[in-house]
Amino acid sequence: MSILFLGPLPPPVHGFSAINAAMLARLEQAGPVTVFNRALPAQATGARATRKAGRALGHWLGLLGGFIAAASRRPTSVYAGFSGGKGQLLDLPFFVVARLLGIPTYVHHHSFAYLNQPSRLTGACMKVLSRARHIALCPEMAKAIGATYGIPQAQLIVLSNAAFLPAMSPPETTPEYHPARQAIKVGFLSNITAEKGIFEFFAVLRRAAEAGLAHEAEIAGPVDPGILDRFQAELAALPQARHLGPLYGADKQRFFQRIDLLLFPTRYANEAEPVTLHEALQAGATVVAAHRGCIGGMLPDHCGSAQPAEAFESQAIQTLQELTSLDPARRLAKRAAIQQHYQTTAERSERTLRQLVQDISHPSTSSP
Image (cartoon, rainbow, N blue to C red; front, top):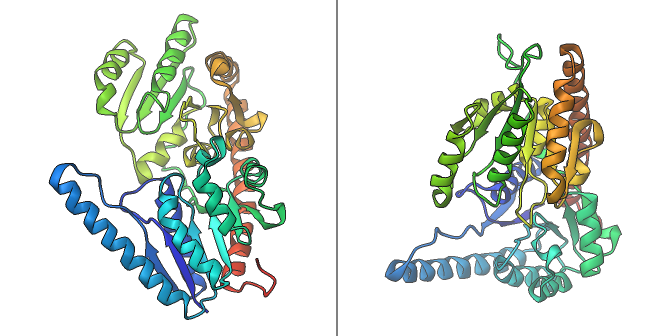
């Protein structure tokens, strides 16, 4: 048994490469894996950019040659993380090799970019991958892949990113969450950019203050230098808000454990299934998010809501009012119900992942 793995791995660390790394770890538990890391070098300019482009081309040609050699030895299967944009042009020759040699192929989708705006390049990839198994993040993504590119539903597998989220550490001796406090704690965690909705978040805080709603706000993440001046000016006008900077590991877990409400007003058109929302639900925080990609299906009514952009601010204020009205016991009960929902999702996703790894490592003779 041998598996060929194709996709970008950290560094750099981003959602796509992180899930690729997590999937690789699971596949390696099942048996030997040959890795073809398609991570591109960091961008550069001038002569340095020319040299880097030459090295990148050489690296890609070396990968393709190694892949052809490995594929000719009849591996068990190919697993590929599917690029969201022009990276598909680099992936396509690998897919052609796998198709010509009849190797069972599993393609993991992570982006709505080519679903929101169908492209000829993606269409070409999908024709080559017409017999592959396609892994989608949610039922909405699976339906869109089928409708847009003609992939039969029988070849689609739904696997939530919740399958890859590590278990949350138990609270420390002094719990982070204090339900008896009057002020609701509102959180924002993301790369802090205009596209991720930081100024919509500030607008909610201003409206909450005008309405006399007791609240505190914590903002986590690195700030885009292009908006730094505006960010600092608006933050300074909101004395109840503070910026914590980037958070990782246990610090990030504690952030989610102490907030009541996560706001996720993203304007990023190709948002898929943000791990940040899973992390908030895992800790029991209520979530109000923009309705994009898979987000609507992540948030049943008792966990929060997904809203179109024009309704986001009003819904955030309404949810803040509802949380303020809860006594400590009901706040704790609400957190417990949200955590139970997340746990159910994670367990279901883990079962799907185990079966998927089994299928990839031991595909049946009838696999496409």
